[in-house]
Structure formats: structure tokens, C-alpha cells
Image 1 (cartoon, rainbow, N blue to C red):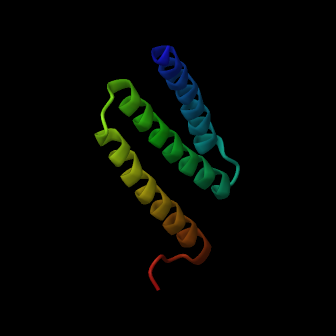
Image 2 (cartoon, helix red, strand yellow; image 1 turned 45 degrees about the vertical axis):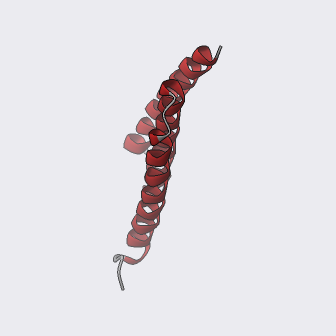
Length: 89
């Protein structure tokens, strides 16, 4: 039963990534593109977690945690760059 849930999760995440990519390319403003990129990072984290569940490996969960930290810092830095024009003051 868990195999069907993992496959359904992969299908949903593939659809979500495709829609996020569309928003990233067609976003009317830079804010929409930032949100789409951040959502793509979240979907990538979910994909890594699903791979970890499918393969029953703990290593993927650690990789997902690292990607979450890097994604958060990247989003904050990109927003700060868009607002102020520089990242480090």
C-alpha cells in the first residue's frame, strides 16, 4: 500500500514542479518568481523525502534538511538583494 502512496506523491510533486516552473517563467513580477523558486525548493525537498521513504534510507532525510536550510538562506538573500540591491552591508 505504501508503494501506491509514494507513486501518487511523485505524480503530485511532478505536477506541482511543472506548475511552479510555469510560474517561474511567466510570472508577471519578480515577487512571483521568487515565490515560485522557493516553492520549487520545497517541492524538491518533498521529492527527496519521498525517495528516502521509497528506498528506506535515512541519508535522504539529512539531505532534505540541508537543502531546506540552504533554500531558506537563498530565498532570504535573493529577497534582500531585490529590495536593497546588495546582500552584505
